[in-house]
Image (cartoon, rainbow, N blue to C red; front, side, top):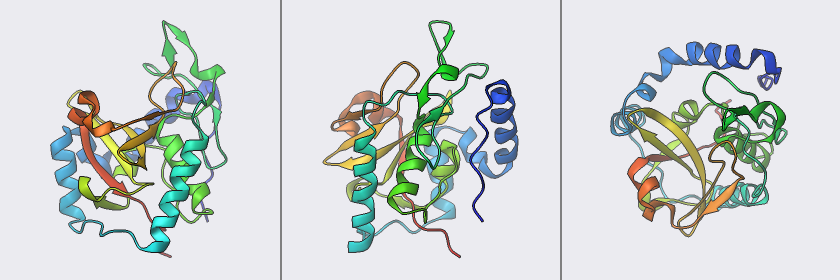
Length: 213
């Protein structure tokens, strides 16, 4: 049975994020190191890289990208988004604020991992469900080389001060669709890995797939 989506009770937002971090912390140690180490650690556990997608997998990836495209213009909401679509976000100690004002608790939308989990769940008719946590999504699926990217693949970004802090959806032709930060709308970034900011933070790509029964 699938796990229910997390509660969106605003008052418990901080506690939810802290509990999630504690629950995942032991199994996601590579998320606490810089990008190169995180990517290397994941590769060590899953050495096989994705081959060109089969016709069926390619069609699924195209559907994922199409679902993501349809979300362009929806607001970013910290903690927002689940299997059903955009949802009310919240604020924690550091996130969800713009110019000192908590926008998360009054914004219906997606954060970066909420967007990717929704797009994959909807496009796969519920056969692919990703956790609502960027580092958890990084450790799911098969690593994809940069020159083998296909629509629907997930692109991950990391900095020494913010390991695995962001995920976007590869849309083909070098583009990424993502929910970037509070105060922005879901957008498409062309030639994302040629943009110095994103190229410098790129930590690798993953291709999700249905969970084994």
